[in-house]
Amino acid sequence: MSEKELGRKWDRCLADGVIKIGTGLGLGIVFSVLFFKRRTWPISLGSGAGLGMAYANCQNDLRAHYLRHRGEKEQEQ
Amino acid sequence: MAARIWPFLKLATKVTIAGGAVYVACDSGLLGSSEQGSEALEKAKAAVPPALEEWMKYFGLETQLPSMPKIEFSPVKSWNSGVRWTISKLSEAPTKTADYSNQGLQYVKDLIK
Image (cartoon, rainbow over all chains, first blue to last red; front, side):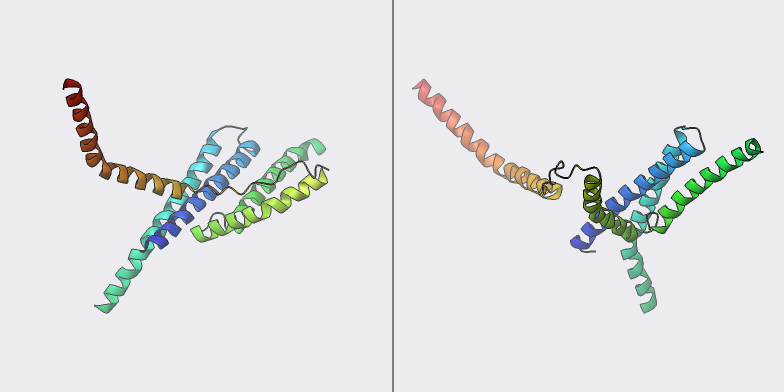
């Protein structure tokens, strides 16, 4: 992976993380206000789930480069 | 009769609002892959100034908000230049230390003379 590509991937990771945490927070707030009498735990659950999704996406994105090459090597053999 | 339907109506409204929020989040690619997420962020960034302008006009505060100054600050550049500065200072350190200690010794010798 070239430096430029790696930098772009990290940028995408951070942007994606911000979006997912924000979305999780927003949905958590909506659910907390509507169904759970303004308790805190849906908000924490939502932002935590968003963080986890962002982490998984980032992991897949960074690993994808190496997985592709491994598949090609197996085909050559 | 209205009193019996009211709780159901409330629940139905709440479910509609929550379901709508979840649908909007999933549909606009907010919960998808990284590319979709960064696309959505770019769209949001591009859509904020016109929306802000419209709101300002609506409230009659057209000239209130000063234009956002274009901030040319880049954390990456600052970090990189900081690293370069540190390493160059570290590489010069032995030579500079030798110079300063020689100067100090010379000064002391002059005093003793």
